[in-house]
Length: 216
Ligand SMILES: Nc1nc2c(ncn2[C@@H]2O[C@H](COP(=O)(O)OP(=O)(O)OP(=O)(O)O)[C@@H](O)[C@H]2O)c(=O)[nH]1
Ligand SMILES: [Mg+2]
Image 1: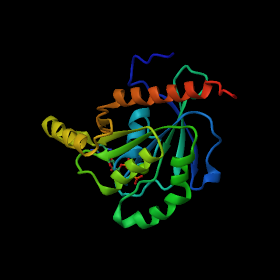
Image 2: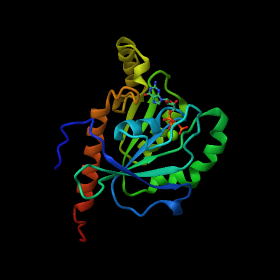
Image 3: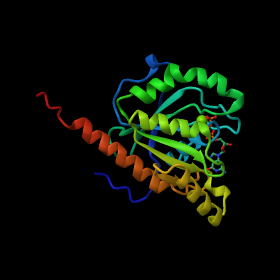
Image 4: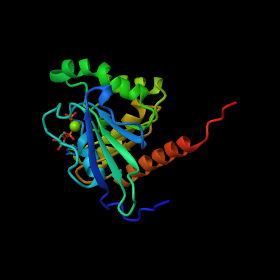
């Protein structure tokens, strides 16, 4: 197993495809990590901060990401990619929610429900914003479909240490069944911890895929 001593190391990345329809999803292969959350919460920014490059397009205007964008992730020195990150369109923003909510049943719900290689869903919430109905709905949806998920509380750089502590306590009460990690795409705070969870899920998914299925 490759041990990464220097977490600021850049990983190698490649954009694979943008899908707005199930037929456009790439063939099943590597374990996938999905980045979910309300519009503008910082999904694309978290991807960029994890990989250390401007891989995913970000914007201060909500509704930037409109397709499921698949990115391959490879460690320097490794011959093959090991992971896929999927950047998803956001939800819950009044102005664009009608448009996007029409799209959910078409390709986002099938992705979350049926994608066999989806190893972990990262549900991003803004650490400065109290829990929203749409976030709770997503967490219920993921629980019901048996998906592993982790809540990532973004934009932690906007709070003082004391405020962050209080916000994290409040979030823990609001999402009692979830593991919650504070994160800042701006400063990189929480990056090592999030990578640990991602790699652990990917390893687990790969081990499960390699376990022979008993035929009796
Ligand atoms: N201060 C601060 N700003 C952030 C952070 N992460 C994202 N932002 C800002 O939040 C805005 C939205 O970021 P995106 O990464 O585009 O958000 P998204 O969730 O991908 O948005 P959609 O694709 O529209 O759903 C941008 O203006 C970012 O610069 C963070 O950790 N700290
Ligand atoms: Mg985005």
